[in-house]
Amino acid sequence: MPSNIADTSLNRPKRPKRPVVGTMNEDRRKQRDEAAEALFFEKRVKRLSRRRLFSFGTLGWSVNDGLVAFVAILFGYWLSPVADQVATSETAVKLLPCAVTFALLFLPTAHVAGLHDPRKRSNITELVVRCLVTTLIAMSLLSLCWMLFSFLRVGRYVILISSLLSVLGLVATRCISWNWSSTFKQKVCFIGAETFCKKAIGFVEENPLPVLLTVPPSAKVYLRNWAVEEDVDEIVFDSGLTAQDELALLGCLDAGVKVSSYSDFIEERYNLIPVDKIDAQWLFSTRLDLSHPYYQGVKRFIDIAVSAVGLVVTAPFILIAAILIKLESKGKIFYSQVRTGRFGRSFRIYKLRTMASNSEANGAQWAVKNDARITAVGKILRKTRLDELPQFWNVLKGEMSLIGPRPERPEFVGDLSEQIPFYQQRHLVKPGLTGWAQVNYPYGASVEDAYNKLTYDFYYIKNASLALDLQIVLRTIGTVMKGSR
Image (cartoon, rainbow, N blue to C red; front, top):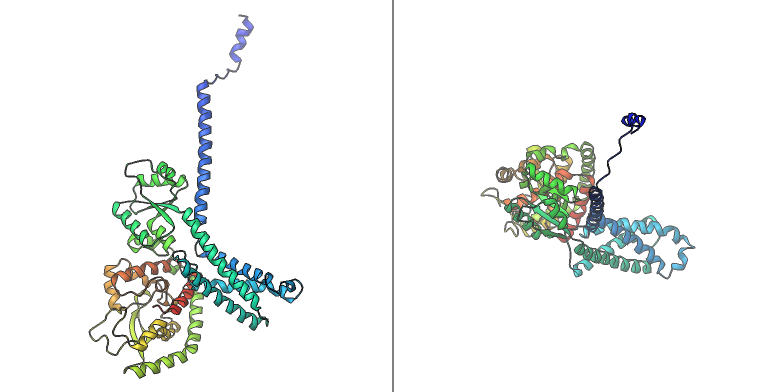
C-alpha cells in the first residue's frame, strides 16, 4: 500500500454505516402507522364534533327559531298578492325591520312556550300546539307594535302566510333535529364504584337525554384503547380518583374522549348541581354569586325599579283580592311570616292570606298539594301567584330580590341543614320572588323535595347572570299562564 495513502487515511472522514434493510422497513412502517393513527384520530374528533353539533341547546334553538321567523316574514311578503309592490314601494323599506322585529318578538314567546328547553321533548301533537300558540302570540305582538310605532299594518295575507310558514318551520326543524340526534347520539360511559354507576344510569334513564349509555368492561383493559374501539364520546367519573385512574383518563383525553366529573356532567346536561357529589373545596373554588359586584349593582337597580312600578301597577289587583279575602273568611287580609334571608338573617315576608285563620295553631307545617287549609280564593291566588305581590315591598326594602332561591322558614331551615349537605349555603344570595328551582321543579313539601330544589338553587348561585335572570322571568310567565305553582 503506498505510504502516502496510508498516511492520509487517518484523516479521512469515516463512512456512515449502511443501514440494515430490516431497520429501514421498520422505521417506514412505524411512520406509516403513526400517520394512519393521526388520520384516524382526526376523523374521530370530527365525528365526535358532528355528534355534539346536533345536540341543540337553548342557544341553538334560539338561533334556529329567530331564523325561521325572519325567513317566514320575507317569504310571507314575496308569496302574498302584494309581492309585486315590495320592490317599488315603501313596503320594501319596512320589510327587513318587520322581519327583524318578528324574530325578536318570537324568541321570548318561544321560550315561554317551552320550545327552547332541550330536555323537554313533546309528542307531535303537543309540539304543533306549542308552535301555533307561539306564532299567534308573536304575530299579534308584531301587528300591535307595527301599528303603534310604524303606523303601518301588516297585511292579512302576510300574517296568514308567515304564520303558516313559521309553524311549519318550527315543527320541521325540530323533527329533523330529533331524527338526527337519534342517529348521532353521543355515547357516554360512567366509571366508578358499582353503586355510583347504577345510581348515575338510573338518574339518566329517569330524565332521558339524547345519549347512549354504555357500560365499561369488567375485565382490566387499557381504557384508552377500549374507549376508542367502542367510539365513546364522553367518560364520566366519580370523585376519589387514584393516580393510576388519572393517568388512564388522561390517556382517554389524548384520544379525543371528553372526560368530565359527574357534577360537571349533570350541571351541563340538566342545569342543576348534585349536592351529594360536591364538597367544601368545590364551594371554595367555584365562582359563586358573591364575586359578581357589577352584576349585583345592576340587579339591585332593576329590583328597585321593578318593585316600585310593580307596587303601583298591581295595587288594583291587590285591592280586589283583599275584598274577596275579607268576604270569604274572617281574619287579616295580609299574612306575615318570618323567613331566612341572605347570610341567615331573618326578615318578615308579606303575602295575601290564602289559608284559613289559625291554620297553624299546632305549629309550623309544610304546605302540601290540595292543602285543606287553603281557602277557595286562596287557591286562585296561589295558582296565579297573586298572593306573592305584596313581596314587592320586601324587594324594595332590599330583604329580597326579584330572582333568587325562595326564602324558607327558620323552623325548617334548622332541620333541613342537618339532613341535607350545604343547605345553609343557599343563603349566600338574597331570596327571590321566583327562582331557577321554581321554574324547573314542582311544588314540594318534603325533605326530598327540598334537596331537589337545592340542586337547582346551587346552579343559580354558581351561574347567576342577567341572561339567566331573564330566562327565569320568561319561564315564570309561562308557569303563571299554565296556572301551576
